[in-house]
Structures are given as structure tokens and as C-alpha cells.
Image: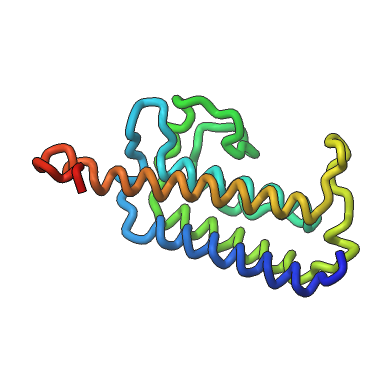
Length: 182
């Protein structure tokens, strides 16, 4: 990596945007809205926020060689999953079990964001080039893992924003003559 400062600035900007999305999604999010599903198999906003934050926490802590933030929040969430579950591979039934208030989702993400900032502050060219997973070909570097985390977070947070938009519009377009034509 030729310019770790530029990479750090880019990553900080990306994680700023992720934090803004989480704050926007949790702002005024009711428990009902957090657990609403457009169909029985769909992900809820609460699950998408929890899963995204768990992935960020798990992967950044691993990169940083630090403890995850999750243990300080796990009991407050009171989820019926294994202690270190991240949501990966969970069923539609499991998704429906994530019913937590927005303030917990926002608070947990705030802590994970701080963990992320501390790690980003330590980035060097050597750290970005460090191989962190040899199970892939080519092996995964810290830089590639960070790009993967950002991509995953943006995808899941975008899904949460879409579900929220569907919920906000569910009673308008389909019951107002001509509303869907605009």
C-alpha cells in the first residue's frame, strides 16, 4: 500500500457514512417498525441493524486483535442465540426473534464505531497488507477484509432503509387511486 494515510482517510469517510445510516435508521424507529416484515421470510430492520453491527464488531475486533464490544451488550439484547452469534446463516424464524428497541441498536453500534475508529487510527501500509485469512485464494489482507466489511454493511443497511421505506408507504400507494402511477 503506497499511501496508508489516503487509505485511512477513505476508510474513515466510508465508516462515517455507515454511522450516519445507522443513526438515521434508528432515529424514531419504533419497536413495531423495527420488527415489521414485508413478508414472513423477509429480514426486519432490527435484525439487519443487529446483524450488520455484529459483523462489524466481529471483523474489526479480529483485525485489531481487540475484544468485541458485544459482551457488554449481549445481556441487554437478551437474544435466544448462541453467545457469539452474528446472524450469519440464520433462518427466517431466527430473524423474527430479534425484537429490540432502537436505542439498544444505536448504542451498540456507537460502541462498535468507536472500536472501528481506534483501529483505523493505527493503520499502516504493513497493516493493510497483512494477511488475515489464508483460507481464500488469494489470501485475504486486512485491506481486503475492510473493503468486504464496508460492502456488507452498505448492502444490509441499504436493505434496512428499503424496508423502512416500504413500511412508511405501505398504506399510501396501494389505497390511493393513481398514487402508484407517479
